[in-house]
Amino acid sequence: MSTETIMALIMNLIPLLFSAALVRSDQSMLPLRSFKISENVTYDCIDIYKQPGLDHPLLKNHTIQMKPSVSRFEFKNQTGNNKTYKKEFECPHGTVPILRNSKEYITNAQFFAEKYFHPLSGDRPGTHIVGVRSSNGPFRGIEAWFNGYTLNISKEQASYSQIYIGSGLNNEVNFIQAGYMINPSVFGDGRVWSYGFWQGKDGKGCYNTACPGFVQVSHEVPLVEPYDLKPGVPVWLRCSIHQDKQTGNWWITLLSKPNVDIGYWPKELFNLLNNGANLVGVGGVVQASRSGSSPPMGTGKFPIGGRRESAMFTNIEALNSNYEQRKIDSFPIEKLIDSPSCYGLRIGKVKPFHRTLLGFFFNYGGPGGNSCGV
Image 1 (cartoon, rainbow, N blue to C red):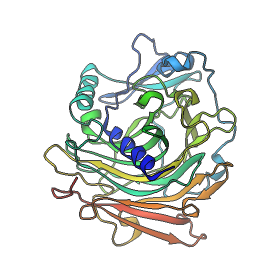
Image 2: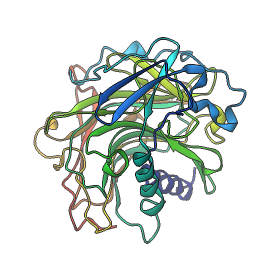
Image 3: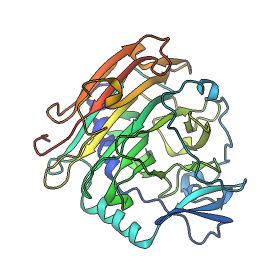
C-alpha cells in the first residue's frame, strides 16, 4: 500500500472518531427487560433476531454468527491489572442489550456531528494522535491491553484511546476501531465510555449501535457503556478486533474477565477487508475545541517517571495473514506523534518473565493546552 494511500486511510480514520456516537434502540421494539444503571443510562434487552443492527440493507440475508469459529480466550490468563470489567447487568438469553437514548441526547449528538466535528479539513484543525501502527499487512486482527482514566474534558473537546484496523484503495477506506472515549458533547457527561466504530462501503459507517450494522451477540456485555472512575484510578481493557477465519466477519472480543465475544461487524459491510486489513494501530487521539484549546490525553501527564504513572498500551499483538499471533514489534512499526509540545510517547520493553508487561509496550499522553498546533 502506497504512502499516499496510508495517509488517506489515516486522515479518514481519525476525524470520524468525532462524528456523532448516537446509540439508540428502536422504541417500536418491546424489550423483554430493561436495566437502568444510572440516571441517564438504560439498556433494553431486545430479541437478538430483532436487534436494530440487522436492519442494514446489506444484511437482508445475513445469518447471525453466535460465536467465533476460533476462540480468543486461550490468552485470558495474562493480566495487566485487577481493575478490569465489572458486569453491571445480564439480559435474558436470546436477547441483547441495546442502549436507550432520550430525544435530547440524540438531538445534541446530531448537532455535534453536523455543526462541528466534520471530516478533517483545513478549517477544522485540532486533531492530534499519539501511538504506533504497522502497514505491513495483510493483518487478520489486533489486540492490546490498555487503560482509561477520567479527565477534565470540556464539552467541545474529546479524548480517545483505541485499537484499529483498516485498508485503503485509491481514496476509499474501510476501517474498524474500538476502545475508550470521553466525549461530553455526545454522551452528555465526562465519563469514560467504551465504544466501537466502523466505516465500510461507500464511506458509510456508524458508532456503536447508533444505526444498523453492528451485530450484538453477548447478552451481558454491551458494545458501549460508561465507567465511573476515581481520579488517577484506571479501568483496564484487553480487547481484540479480529476477522473470523470461516465467515470473514470482524469480531470484537473482551479478553479480560468475563471473557466475552461482544459481537461483530458483518463482512457484508465492507469491500476492502475481505482478505484482512492492510494497517493496524493503537494509541490516543484528541480533538481540540473551536477556541483551539487541546484536551489532555491519557492521564493528562507526559510519559515520564515510572511506567505506571502515565497511560499505557501493552501486550500489543497482531494476527498476520495466516492468523498467527505476533508481537506488534515483530512487524515494521511507525511511531505517531504530531504535537510533542503537548503530548509524549515513550516506548519500552521488559523481559518476558514479567507478570504484567510482556515485551513491547508504550506510555503516552500529555496535558494538551493552547499551543498544540494543527
